[in-house]
Length: 116
Length: 110
Image (cartoon, rainbow over all chains, first blue to last red; front, top):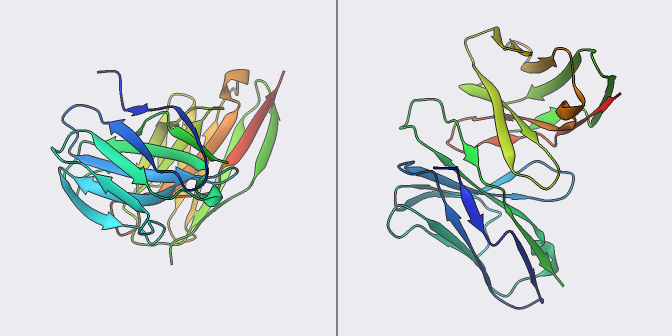
């Protein structure tokens, strides 16, 4: 296993269009996270899954955003009616540990979204 | 609230030591992390420290934690040009999510 993978790596879209990103975590990692990173900032948490259950969502995740992890393996993040302010790097991370242990998160290379 | 602050920029000469500083606010953080990000890439976990430790050493990396002052530092010994990158500290606060600082850009001059 070579780590967390994300597709596509780059996405350019027009304002108002819908986009979907995919994340494949490290095999058997039961926790999966989505973060958003804008230029000059650190990653900001969006949402978190333990297996297929979405356990936490940030207030940054407006109703135009939806994330799924249907079988507890890969995850998708969809943004509907994209806005220019959605332009950012979307990072996925996964973690192998159960609650109470080190929450060491391994990040993918990210999907860079540009909304024109 | 949860907030992590870092200085924006550090420039050092190759072979010198680098010290990157970070302050955090959530005293309930269990672990604190240092990540490295190179241009166009994702984040690479460098090291982490458990909150009941004062120091952790891992090859060229030394992490110091002052829990009373909520201050964390990363020292890189014998800094190399390949160490040029953005370094993020992060805390896990009271949740599974990580709270990141804005990052410190390290420039290593030959």
